[in-house]
Image (cartoon, rainbow, N blue to C red; front, top):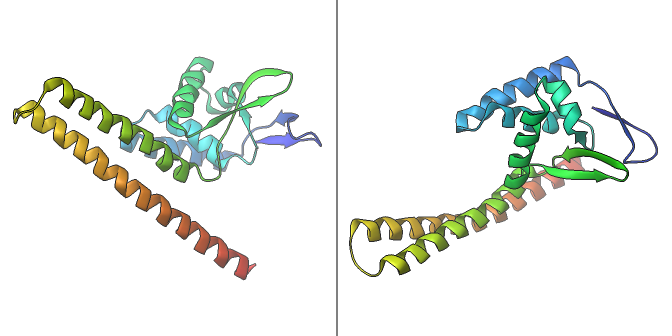
Length: 176
């Protein structure tokens, strides 16, 4: 958690409450169910549950009782995947990270890049292998077609997610 002054980039880091830290650990364990490292889940869980606009890598290491190297490596992977973003503070050389409010919708949008790259790889490989009906050709055609098919569903899912959020937010405004 971060205590703020009038300057939005000036922060004093304070400890996250124990009940939230317990949830961070639960999130870390749940994250491993998808085959990802627990540390990724712990960093995501911390940023998800933090009221701070951003948290330094050093503070993450302290709060999670993890090495600076582990936090750095994990943060880099999560940043590349689009789950977290680096936040710069003028005059502060430390790395600070934040999570967007709709990280899950952003992830879905970012995943489409992977799908298109994979379909393109399969198409390029098919061009290299040449025409035919060999097991390699069938595998590559299935790969290309699968990723193109999934990418089509991503467009639909993103549109539906936007509708779900709009309906939820309209309902929240009426109940306020």
